[in-house]
Image (cartoon, rainbow, N blue to C red; front, side):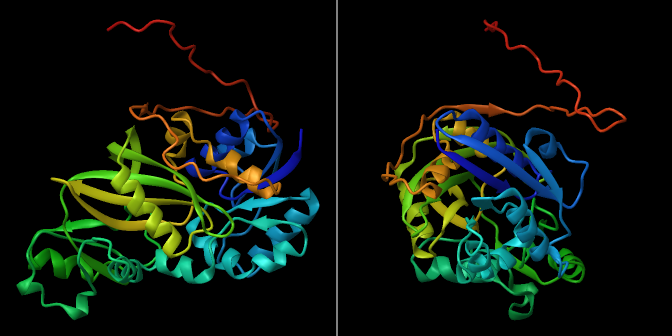
Length: 338
């Protein structure tokens, strides 16, 4: 079997752990997994083959430290997970290429389009994709707004942090003074969907999975279901290829009475990647094939609809000598009472 060493950043995140699960669940390639994180005390560390501490992405030493890890571990492919790292990785892909490591990240212009929510809004309008109207607070009169509206950080918003529904002028003034560089957005009501898309290293979309978010907590999907929606998938592919996306992205959309309204692009894997994997699309395994130089055919819509996910807590135990203890996994029932 071919050998490949993959480094995944943000080892403590649910997204990183989803990628680890994806690579562990495939058996076509001998994949060695390295994780990095700013904290040693994280779950992903204990399910990877090697782990290294790195500084926070804003530290000037961050990039050199990751490069050192890639040299030491002979990393073939690096998958960035944490949004705050993307600018550095996108701008320095060539430095990693010099040591034989491919960084799976979109180019700087695409990263800017995704991380700046106003730029995302303008991009959607430019390519003809319906999106909620968006404004900077200084460009509108709060007394003439049609409430409710949403407020969120314009840059680098994550997990619904500082995202609020505003119901009147008083709340508008309250939140605009407390959120750094906010964006005001039209309120759209409807079911929320995420489309997991994978593009090759030239920006050509290979496959995608449409997921309905049934229940979320702090911006993270706890219950979800895969659905077949060719129109939504087609629009997500249009978005991904227009940027273009390199590698993975998750693209978010509201749908109400047949109206699709796209509102966010995350140029990375989703924390709910595991649902797409369970539905038959193991996109990290496809990335391995690409990194090994294999030709991967476009196979759009290749996944099973109606696969549901219900999350539950899973723990990692470590003893006083920093040795991992056995997991307390629940044995699955062979039959479920109906």
